[in-house]
Length: 142
Image: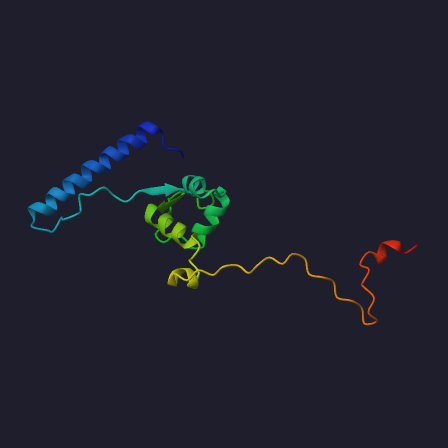
C-alpha cells in the first residue's frame, strides 16, 4: 500500500502538531525541554545517499544492511522491499572515513622529494657477457 503525497503531508503536519503539544506538556510539567524543539536530524533515503556518494542503490542498501551507517533503519512494510532511512550524521561520518588519511611524513610536516628519474635501467648482460636479446622469442619458427 503506497501513501499519497497529500496523506504524507497531513501525516507530517499531525506529527509536528503532536511534537509541539508534547513540548508544551513537558514544559508545563517542569521537564527540561532545552534543545527538544530543535529541527530533527535529516534522514536520507537509499537513493539520496547513492546519488551523493556516486554509488548504486543496491550498494547503499548492502552497506546499510552491513551496519556501515550507524542509526540506519528500515521502514515498516514488506520486509523484502522495505525502504531504508539513513541519518545525515551517519552519511557524513561514512564519507569522513572514505577520505584518504595523510601520510605520517605529511602529518609531521616533512616533505619527501622523489628521487631523480634515471630513465630505463640497462639490461643485465648474460653470464657469457653477450647482451640479452629479449625479442628472440619472436624469431623462433614453428
